[in-house]
Image (cartoon, rainbow, N blue to C red):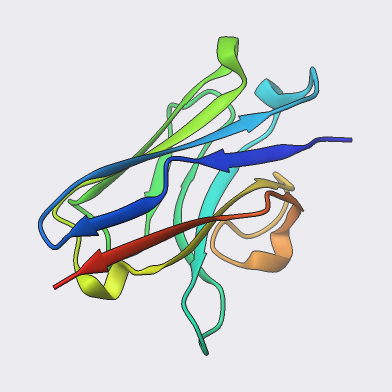
Length: 124
């Protein structure tokens, strides 16, 4: 069993930055790829970024490419999402999740364990 706890969300002005953290329990954390998703009110949960178990391979949604950076520290059982040049359309609840390595990177159904989410609000 893996438990995930996100933190680092908040209110920021457009153009600002935030760093989200996702702390995981469980000794198998370093064995699994991870991802970040977000969900805005009235919208479906959407893929944001993902990272391989080693951290050597990363994936990004087109909407955040060049602005967001995903990373992980397996020694700390933590995944990060550095978000720069934030836009009002980035406003959402952000979730981290553990992916089944045999399944698609960008589909939410590929992820077995989810955190409770952290709210990010970007004002214009």
